[in-house]
Length: 152
Image (cartoon, rainbow, N blue to C red; front, side, top):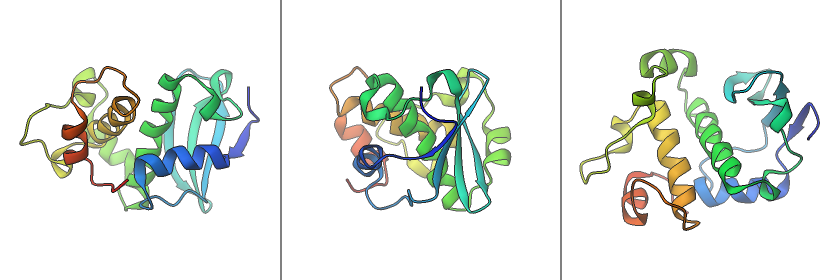
């Protein structure tokens, strides 16, 4: 288990760069443990971008964790990127909802990043991460490379 509050490790920053290229500012990102079972991004507070993570699962370095957990980190970093772009995560989350449908997206040629809600965008990024590692995903490499706006 990692410490209660920490910055991203250099290896984790490398993982993030694979997903986001230079589009995300990783310096202010902090992971903070909490006693519940769900990760979320609290937004920007006190000059930092906070990812709140279940303390029991907060590892010292996600690059040494199972790929599934690395994908969740990419999902949460998508919310960090959204906040850095000026998205009010609280209102966007209320608009998106929190059902399984809130996270689902259609794998079709007409799918566009800007038409997706914040959770769908985060799932696309998480699935793209898994796809690049040969894991099963709803779409293929071409789909994710077309939908995702990040050059990596």
